[in-house]
Amino acid sequence: MMLIRYLSQIGKYFLMLKEVFNKPTKWSVMRGLIFKEIDDLVIGSLGIVAFISFFVGGVVSIQTALNLTNPLIPKYLIGFATRQSVILEFAPTFISIIMAGKMGSFITSSIGTMRVTEQIDALEVMGVNSLNYLVFPKLIALLLYPFVIGIAMFLGVLGGWMGGVYGGFTSSAEFIQGIQTEFIPFHITYAFIKTFVFAILLATIPSFHGYYMKGGALEVGKASTVSFVWTSVVIILTNYILTQLLLAS
Amino acid sequence: MIEVKNVEKSFGDAKVLKGITTTFETGKTNLIIGQSGSGKTVLLKSLLGIHQPDSGTISFDGRIYSEMTSDEKRELRTEIGMVFQGSALFDSMTVEENVAFPLKMFSHKTPAEIKERVDFVIARVNLVNAHHKKPSELSGGMQKRVAIARAIVNNPRYLFCDEPNSGLDPKTSIVIDNLIHEITVEYNITTVVNTHDMNSVMEIGEKIVFLKEGVLAWEGSKKEIFKTDNEAVTDFVYSSNLFKKIRKAQNKED
View (cartoon, chains in turn blue, orange):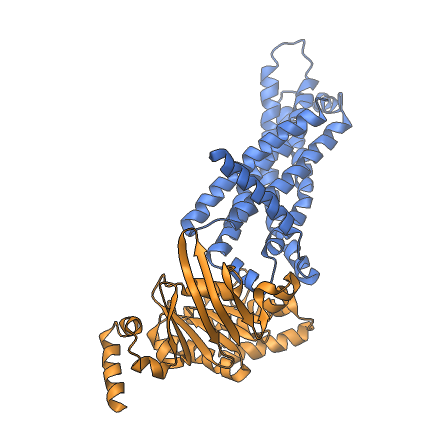
């Protein structure tokens, strides 16, 4: 029974995606909505992403340094480990999970509130495709999400460098040598492919939970929580599948 | 004119509308009344196309809704104005932006023409100095006026109002009722108001449709409602002592 419910929800999610691209809203209106979403979702997330990335990068560097007790292991591994952790996993995946909380709950609660207060019904009665009007601009705005993750990568490594060098764990030259060691450009491509997929999930799963919610204010809160859980679960599963497909083959 | 023929609607095992047949006339304020759970909202949502009737037809000036293509339905929706129970104004927009929304979406007017029309409509609903306010900064009555302004800005042929007086004090309710009635007559709109406010019935009910348990139990005008012997109607209308006295007085006068 539960399986049928999950399958039905997944089917509903894909039907929603199809409807998002139907009956497009007038471009003059849509343009404004896209800029507003870029401001709310992308620009509005830069501060917290920068803060978290910088300090987590620093912590990764210090933790690596503290665990390198064998004097035969070269110090440049601190830079190497920081780069690999930040670029491969921390920036694309963990920042996305944090964003599932920040952006996701914002999207679910704002669309959910519109549902509760009949604003979505008002759009439908006027003849507006409410899914296109509400979800499409978020999807387009989040095409800039890889830009956010690019900043997270840079600040993560910078934080690692500062933590390692100013903490006295390594020299600047060694850290930079570590960053350059065995650099595989495809890892960047892999990270950005993941980021792109996560951006689509971040825009659509919270929208789905907000759009189809029923009830009142309490249910808006519950929908936000459920949306965060499901967005995180799907991001983690997708991360596993993409890693298997792109790196393990 | 909106014609409803044998409309039935069920949700699961519960039959909510049972063969409703009636007409809502142009240039008149048509009221749907009835107790909570009588099917008023389902009938209104069926008229709006939010619910699809299981059987029966709804036609708008001869155009049968269920036989329309999706483009024709979209076109029809631009001819409809709706005032929701909770106003349903867009929180993120100012009053001016809310009212301008249907024009921006569906008309080819220039920004100057839109501004002119919005100013006219806002003045028509007697809203002053509210252009740049957000809905959260307005009183319930003012929000209803904005909702009415938004509903009529695109010159609709059909205006639907779902409990326009809910949450309003009696004086403001009368103002809103009269505004709806004036606009209906002025623009020759087919207006359908879903209400259980008896003051509205007495004030603006030119055609009243009474629903009881999904069945059309009575229809007539506000004058006829005083004289009817239909038990279901009298039970509903004269549930308060005040209205019982009014009826007595009215019947004595006649």
